[in-house]
Length: 116
Image (cartoon, rainbow, N blue to C red):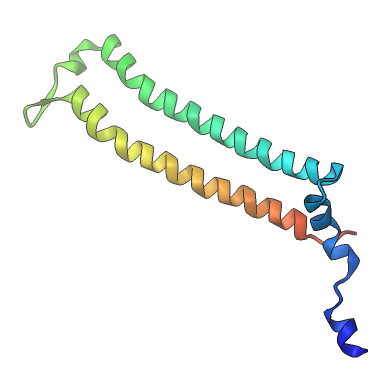
């Protein structure tokens, strides 16, 4: 009799999880919120990449003297676009993964939070 009481989980703890698995309206709202947060994050970082990489050709068009600068015999635009863009993209990718995981942790915390 005691083991049955120990192994039985309270209904409140599993209520939100069951709403997710049974695809109730509350579960759908929770998942929709997570998807919306992930989409908003992706769009913001796409904007950062578009501005960051799109500003370079604009810089070269506005200030043509920058295009004439050479570093170690290689034109500066080639260095910036060829070598400088990769660390930038890696940093944006790392940021996305970090923030997406944080969104998922927040979602998990909401799902596991005891109801009051």
